[in-house]
Length: 252
Image (cartoon, rainbow, N blue to C red; front, side, top):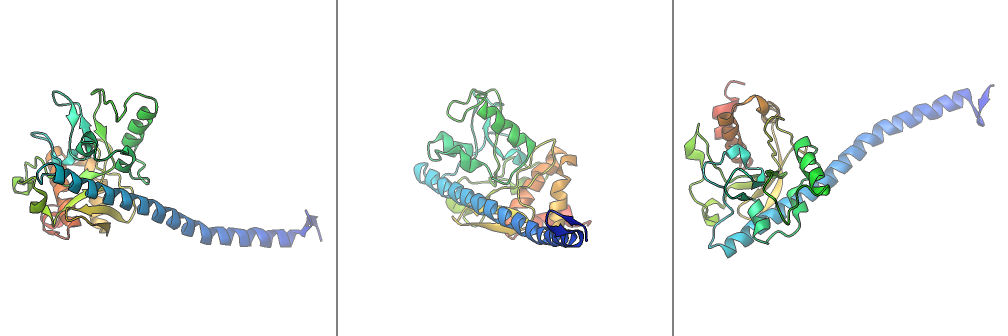
């Protein structure tokens, strides 16, 4: 019997076959384990952001971080913007500007692979943009979308009427539903969204396949539909499916 490296050819084929089977079993398990680890870190970031929002409210007479005038709801994944005079921190970025969040790493989900975020983080590493001394030359996206609803032309009744934390305590307020313009919706976790609530808790919400398919097609929506979808997502995360069903799922 022909041998290769101390094994017969048949034995070698058996070893290769068994190895292939084991790899087929282990790789999905390892992938799931890595995803669960990234999800745990993301959940920790989300919880820390919600805690920081509460600390901000304590310092600012019960008010949560706000946006700027006529800011679109679909743009609520920015922390610093250059389209105001002067450029400024907005939304969750105000937590950093106020000195409440000191480590900007919690603004990034470890599972997020979107190129827009990768570009900005790479630029930061090259010294083109820093969190400590923003130069105003570019907007600053983060991994987490903020549920403070800004301009929603198709449904102005969904816009946030109060900045008081106590008035929105039952609402979803922070989520890794990152929705960049021009690149579609790229969610970090394949099964759903990490969500923080104004009441102070955070958790993981498994998202229906229809909603994920809609998010993947968001690049084809105009700005008004994107604003409405941002509002619908946060209502959906808070277990209020009415807006999503009425405006996006009724024809599916």
